Length: 284
Image (cartoon, rainbow, N blue to C red; front, side, top):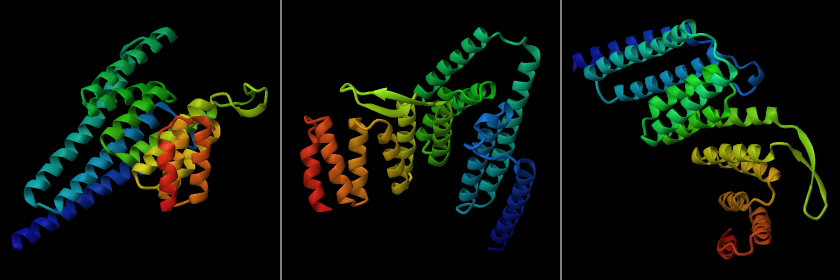
């Protein structure tokens, strides 16, 4: 009994020391900041993702300590040491490669990034998510606004069920796309003019993904806001209308549910779900 108490005290002390060290070294590093997109810098973007991954794995270690004593402590100590080693090794690798090779031409750089994207995609298919994450990080270390790489990271985090990271990455993608958008006036097939943005489809899809992840995290109201934002950019998108119907049913909003059902019926009268939705609305 006394031995167990001493081990637990030792573990708490060691964790406090580890937390202090991490706090000193990384207190200034934040997760992807969607409000500083124009100032995104190579090292900062890479380090934010790497350090957040380290924090996630350290948190998992803390939870395991509650179940075991000495063996888990040793595992935590070794895991933490190895994780720090991998981070610094990766950093040195990037610095060494940057110092040794000649600056790439624009064409060579694009080719390299495309190759890394292909490689990362292949690793994802093999479910080698940690390696894929490193490839995507390498891409954003060179091109901090590479949307395809961030989308890859988002997919990796979703596969790992790291929803917090996935949401932050999805929000970052949305912010990048919104920064690129410009207001434009378009015309419908019937000659009616309306205001929209140049990349409405891309921003709509990014908003949908934010909503989807919020729903996975059980943040239903935030999910509804994101889905509705996506729908405002693509008002006749059957998938978005269907999503708004489902989320409105969850929120028990009968008026909005009925509105979206009617809109879906107009856009896609052959949709088999319409009849089913009319039945569901009676239960609200």
